[in-house]
Image 1 (cartoon, rainbow, N blue to C red):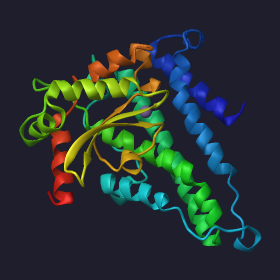
Image 2: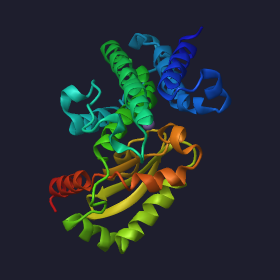
Image 3: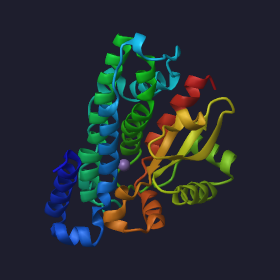
Image 4: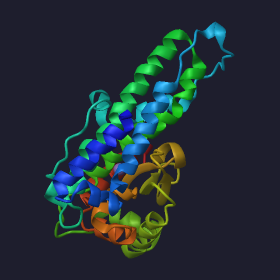
Length: 287
Ligand code: MN3
């Protein structure tokens, strides 16, 4: 059995254990959809493994290292510090802590399998990058960008996402300067909520919905990204609030009803975390 199949089989087995649903039934119901992210992760591992580092003399070499490679690492370090670059961050709540809005089963699989998968791949890509740099093979370095962006983005995005959530509280709305900014830039909290929700629901395929901060204009903005593309690299916005709308993030609970999941997400947003991010981003931008 290919390594990929072993991985998916293990994921299905885990799903079966956690859900009490037989593997065959999971397949039949296409709940194995949760494996789609696992498949993407495995495809990316294969991609990294497939890149061959050559001696500089034997390849026609570009001379410039793509700066996005360093950017991805810089953004992760800014969020998690040097040590956090390579390790799975702990959650500040139990896996069941976001229930009934996001099930404990989704949270556990998402955190321990998927997020860890991105980190494993990022480590493999980082190792290969070091090899390629040592050999002076810039072409191989640059060929690693998609893997670094996907897996580094996956690590970064999920890290922000976990901190953006908290068990449902009595204050499901922002307050203070963040609320003032939302009112100023969107008209009202409800208008923001509509725009963020509609954009997130409309992401084609797999991706993320975001509330970001435009440092130059000192404004808030809603944006979406495909796959695991990091918000800052894609749109130049500092990420404040992210929502994973890959199917694995909701399918086991909401099936194909992404809009219901997006609605439920608003019950578990940690607005204090979003406000802290907003304040930090403004300070960093000198506003
Ligand atoms: Mn995810």
